[in-house]
Image (cartoon, rainbow, N blue to C red; front, top):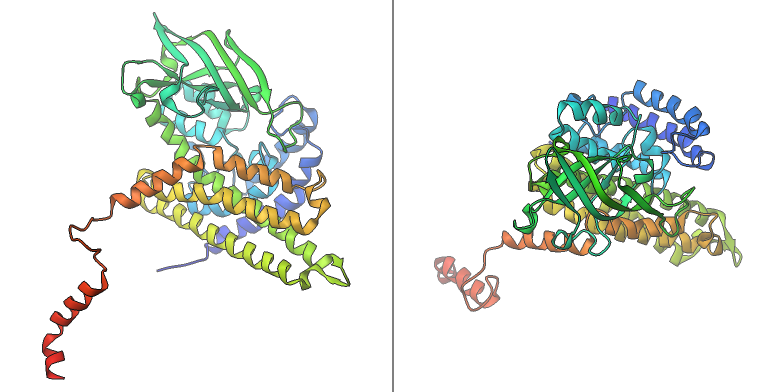
Length: 432
């Protein structure tokens, strides 16, 4: 049976989360310098009590299954919650931190849960799940982005230790992280996707050098950017800090990347809805040339187009989430996830642009969030694989299921169809 409503019990939780975000969490954006800075007394005074309220309502770390202390709600319910959390802005925002589901910690927790040893889980996973520490995923490199065929960072086994050397680029939240999960070449003679392995690297290990913290233009990031340019110089880590099998880093990475892509899209819906709210409020509030903006035909067209774009995208996200829950196999839904990844930046930028335009000069100023939303749209189009790559993934999956015709003309060639129909109904046609 098809249904477009969640169960009443969970809807009550969503209603509470929406009020809680608007009344208690969103105001923190203007008084807490950075939600990941555990040394900030203001942050420590305000955020942990709110996290306790989230736990009391059963909404803490909803991305986790029961075996990891989460509620195991599944992706559809997580999508509905993330729409609400996505209102809190771009980058490392306070909403996901208060609800215990901030990136990249969510994906890193999944990796540790699947591939970590009992010691790893005790030292890193549990504090991560409790919100006591933060982590970083260190994969992309300055000379080649996310293309594994040009990676240079390597790990060489020396007795009971791995020795890491190389550079990583745009390693998110490294300056706040207790540990990094690093992808490095261990088997250079293997095929490209079997050359690398994944490692836990404590941030305070000798040789881990953050060359600089890189900011995202258009985002307000207190105290510097959140994306580190890191050099690993003879970094020694224990042999058992490898996650998964040797040469299987990409198998390990897919544990986090597929889920991360759909989670980004879920939060993007929240950003779109926030921009739409502001667009509509401005339209009915602002007068120009003797009438409200909402009376202008082009503004009405903007409102209608934005609403349609958001609802179309939202349904695609929810359907993809439903398929993940239904099949329990990210590979089976790979094309759908790619489609969501492609659509998210396009719709977010489209809606944010309309909202900015209706606000005029105020919209482009730093007193409104629209420029940050536009940049976030670009960011969503780059993070976890660029949009262009996901278009190829989707197209290849679609075309792989299409049977070619061996005939000269297409299978829906009208003359051939007409001839076939005349043969099928020849007796009736002759009689009449």
